[in-house]
Length: 195
Length: 166
Image (cartoon, rainbow over all chains, first blue to last red; front, side, top):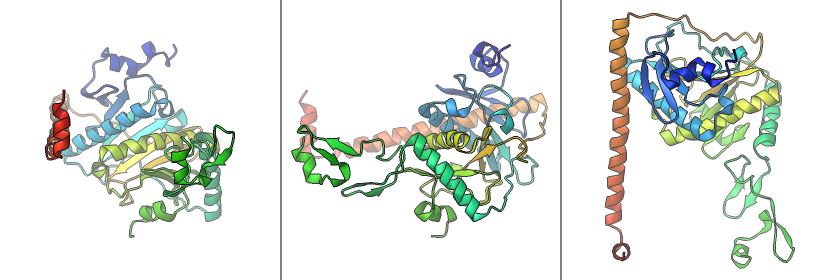
């Protein structure tokens, strides 16, 4: 049986309403149920309605909605249980502890000393190695999601690259008379006359 | 500035810096490549992070997860928010952890069971709390709309005039 087919996926059946669950929340993109094997009282599974195996596949807009729903549920748990805290947890991949082939967001009510294994060990890292890793990851990020070129635009100063900033724009413009100009060299006044 | 992460945002070497969110390597990593995604602005806990600010963290968290797969050849990632308990910083953060076979991390818990009747009661209480928070939001939205209308009504004569045209 292929677990990746929605008709065979347990959580797709949960979303479809074919499984008896304790549903506590629903919106356009997600359903939230009480986990039948909770780490603590109130352990919620937030389930995207669409079938995604890992978080990386979820479109930004849907993921943003899931995040906000998780926040809302965390807040409701804190109020209901007068709790000390919550943990929000996602496992992408078997090696990360993922058990179902459908992305799940765990929202777990926490208390100090509750023994729930979500503590992060703190390993000392050699600063040089750390910086090397940072450069590798930052480089890959720039490759995948935008260059880290620094663009200078008048009045805005230096803007770091990143999808939110200006790096998706071309660095050069070509005017109708074939003149190529760097964005950084265009003065604000030029924009008016070159339209 | 007292907050370590605020200092990072201001002058740390980042993996990614966006307008509302930044990503840095954790200085005491749980695994190699342990990254934190933080809002540029300082919020202590999740409940203090406005929805819009939290939404802004979602795409960056996803991208970092994708990048870690590619850059560090990991086999999985964990996303973790320790909110209130197990939280070591006064600046809200999302942990993105690259995972590999035999990396020594073992997230997990022993499942608990509760009497059905107790769960029934709890479920109802929780649903009420969820609905209430939705109501609070609705109320807030209505209030915002009201203030918006009030501001509009105090606008200049010209706009009123324009509105009358049709």
